[in-house]
Length: 473
Image (cartoon, rainbow, N blue to C red; front, side):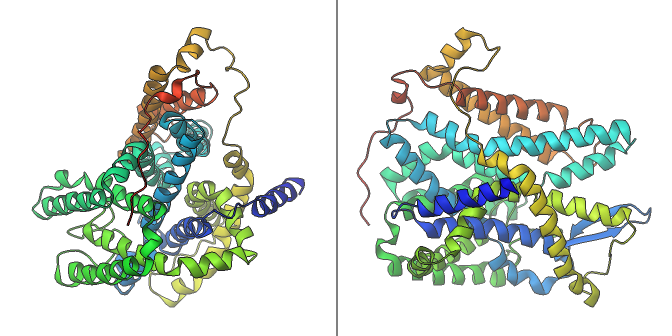
């Protein structure tokens, strides 16, 4: 109870200390987008048993075609990347005003994502090892559970790549403005064309180009896009919606913005022109709502809730699938797991009770692991014990510091990506492919090591983009 009270006092203190210049609407959009993803995953979860009596899980969307248009609203990951662009531009500019550089910004910004993620990775790997050694669990079954629990990590791969590229992409934005996302949209179109022509390999670049295009629009918001809000918002809203209708009802794109097995083309994996059209609609709507919602947040207790959610938003996202697994597994072993047919009245009736139970389990997980996210910035009191002094000295200097930072993040991304790409039932010792686990933990250790070592004097001159005048629109 003391911990909860301290957390509530901290939330209230942060609310009272919010500077007037803060764009509160951005924080609201971040929280809403992640919570919508969580609720969406829970709502479409289908649980049942195969012919061998084994527990199975899948998505209900293939059996609910009437819900496909609803995904135009429910698919809100573009909102998160747009918000990420805004927030990353703000924090990068603040870092440079303090005399810092992109290396230090990357270590602080990206490092805050790694510590909560490492906790999830270690818990999954440790749980898998315990299940194998002490409960004689099937290796394939353990891998399947870990694979489901690690579903949120595919999103983190994309976002970490975007974060690492932010200094370069922001410099391009400052020089070329909206030409950058237009070029990226063109590359997405070429990738879609390759996929439609039966060359899916050449469409994989859309995983990068699509999210970068949306991220760039967050830069544009931060650097003055709202100055002509109505003139920008209405074309985005109606132009995006019209394009979406043409692409899905006349063109070859599926209606659903969430991947459905069997479709000729997916809109989400990788991002397609149709998903970018949804992003345009969402951005236009956000621009139109911004002033009214911002005013409401400045005179409402809702701001306390926004701060509370954002303080542990990554923990919520990372553990929401695990919460569902824990609850469904408990109901299964208790022999009371409901498995009605998708679309039946009983199935719909169970949505609300399951949401409530999922939320309670997730709240418990957030109470346990949320403090790790809150303490995601290590103190730079002294170098870690056991590290040779020459290594700590080298890590404080510009060139090796930048090289080690980029290498660390690359290893983290490679480890997460490898786990996501490995088939879901291949037996592994830790539920993860061992090389991927080693790569991730090595990269995370390198980033954490650098965050405990202050940069040497003058290191802020490396990877520093020349100051450019703000673009006028």
